[in-house]
Image (tube, rainbow, N blue to C red; front, side, top):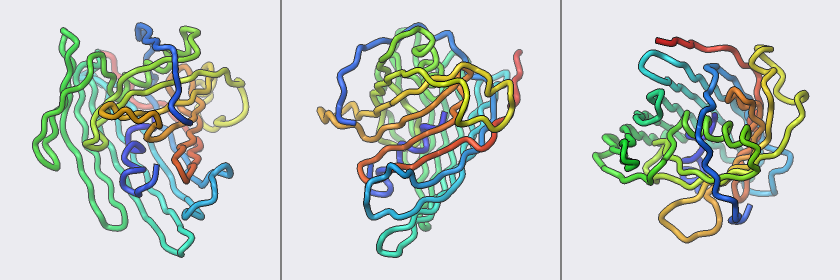
Length: 271
């Protein structure tokens, strides 16, 4: 699911639904992502409000593989943003991660370049059997960070969202850490809505695209603040196998569409 590299987006460009009360539901997670590679087209949404941004173009590739040692994630985004003043923001983001199949260990490597300015974050995280969790950064400098009990990492959050939808619950709440920046874990609230089985996002492998769809609205909140407003939101259409056919990244003065162009099976090794 294309979430991690977008978390740092509002911070880096100095931009990013009102705080919502939800039923706190954390179902037992039995859902599992189907390994796949997806290609997306990025553009400025027609819903985007008038702001300093006049155009957005770009592409994104997301790959999730299952290996003997666990999940392997690779993502890349290339984006060009034009402003009212005639300026251009060129941004490239790469995100690599490995997550154990039980969701208890996680390593991350995130790099972004915005008009020549480079940011990098590398490290690992783990959840212990007693429920406690922590992250350790090695880049840009050594740093340890406690994480909330029951935190989900990259693949775990996708599995949680699918399981929430399958359970029939309309709303849920979870804790997430992805390592895409050093801002720490976030609280995620999710609202689930039904979706039509046909329509958008029908390019690619027919078997992958035949899975049951839902729509969701996710809001991401900082944990170390009483702020009721989320850092950012994502509206998406996703399938039971974890494939996302459409994203809508929602910030204060900008909405970016990320629409599926193609999706194919990826490496799936069971040992």
